[in-house]
Length: 577
Image 1 (cartoon, rainbow, N blue to C red):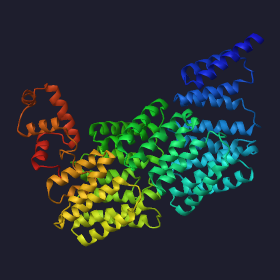
Image 2 (image 1 turned 90 degrees about the vertical axis):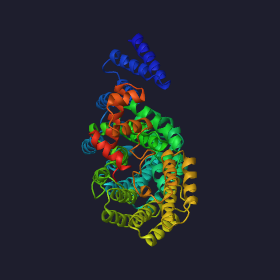
Image 3 (image 1 turned 180 degrees about the vertical axis):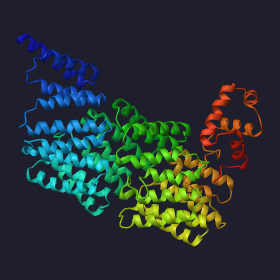
Image 4 (image 1 turned 90 degrees about the horizontal axis):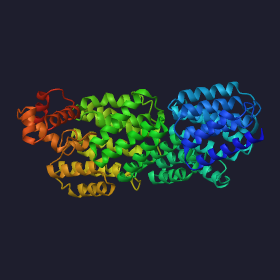
């Protein structure tokens, strides 16, 4: 009836206006109202279901979005290949953002086998490209995904599908860098840049993803600032804000790159924003955002905040599968922050598990020298010089053929730590000089500060004044806002003698006992003196519940279960390395 049609049109306009204004609850309510009153055979139902799905996705309700999209797909004619492909990709994307990327990959595989009418307008190519995207994110057969993308690029070029062509090239550059084919990855970046120049403005909602892929590769080859520039372009793309899960992922990536660039304070605020968005989106990217927040908080000196974020990420990982794209880094951060400093012998096995076993299944070729260096430090922390040397040697092998500085730096810095620990000063000097040479002008301020600390230790061992190197490290940490780094410098300066702590992944915090606060140190020392909880409460003028709370945090931080164990550690003067 004409009156009903007018009412439906008014409701649709109201819902569209609310969606554009960001009133997502109102938009969803109006769209559902339209679906209740519109006749069952109305041709507009499919579009309304699609718009409702977009609204639900923006609200982080991926399950509801998938249901709406599946209803829209049922109403899409078999011959409408482009529309069906777009809906299938949207379903898979919502499955991925909800944390089930494996289900998304299976759904795309099944659709490619069962769907007919996908040959027109690059519909099948669209599904194949997104299948390759899921494969790279999962870390399954990345080389096969790269080969598929090469074929897709040729077909997209011949069919003049410019957006799909550029998207496929950016994705291929990412895939090639992941498997360590740096020369071809470089070439693909250049091709993508040239193709972007002729891409019609505002043609596609995939532009933000293109910038995200390029950011990942550019950050590795050129430096974190180059990656941050690409991410800014991704964040400026309005379509990115319609995918809250993806938007949270961009912010988490930005936080990581800010840390790499030494911008600790900005990384803290960015990661906080990433967590806020990820909580709304309710997807797997919340784990990533929490881990990056924990790492930024740790370097800013917020030890307890970092542990809280890391614990929340660890609990979330028990319930959700995590994509390989950032699984190793997330688990590494959790391991680094939650392994008690008083139990370093546990670190090697935990790190191995974080990296996906001794084969480093979850670590890309680019990052394997870094992973080897982490294993080197873990072995040093647990007094296993043989294992440390073995991991340092493997770092050199993993760095072979790498064309940019960081892999080579990690190999040489790891070897310098092993040589210093064993007393081989000639080898340590050669490795330190090589590490400085390899790093050159590359933008890696925190790594450079670590190197200055290592050289300060080397000079102190040789009875040479380490003050210039300590000052250089201090200036870098100060400019970056890295309070943990400043604590290292101040500790080394105050000791006035060579310290083994700079060689370890977990040098003691400002109190030498796993980041205990001043009040917790007071409680621990009174326990050593044999005081009861009531006597401690009376002396510190606090309640007995406060003392009990402090003791629980102390036991957790130092991984002890009794007052006698705590007393033994405190009397030793430092955690038992």
